[in-house]
Length: 77
Image (cartoon, rainbow, N blue to C red; front, side, top):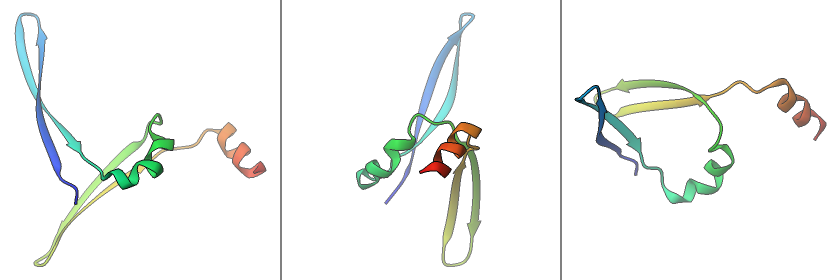
């Protein structure tokens, strides 16, 4: 099971305090081996949600374009 977690972040700027929400998605530890090779990469995020009478579905898609070097090295292997 995965849940969204919300934290309020406080930032001080020019003697004023600003607050904004920060959402975290805690993933199960059984996915660590699959996630760790990708943790230092930057991904584009796409969020879609759909709701029916029986289910509520949220799809989070993370994509990134590979550089020319990565594509060439993968073809050689």
